[in-house]
Length: 121
Image: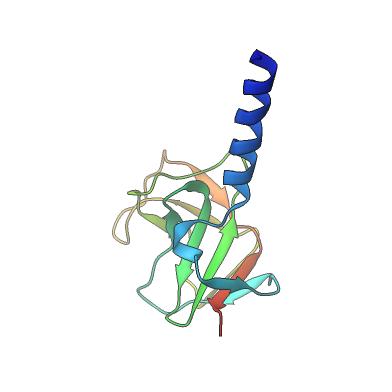
């Protein structure tokens, strides 16, 4: 009986991990890209249900970048790139902080590929 309950718990956890975060519901994933252009003054934010998934909303598309399993941010943390640029690519570093002051002791995480999510038609 205990084994059946443990297996059920593992299956439920696995299916929850496979479902997209709420921010991406109703959208369809496109082909991942190495780089994405970014508008000035916009920021990355963490998916509420996944601390390892950074999102960037450009208005029509939400771009998702998966961080390494050892690196993540909380939903209320400000996440900014180490360097200001008009585009960001896989391997670029982000950290906790704000536009005025970087946290020198905060986590630094490398961005993954960017997957576009667009509204399904």
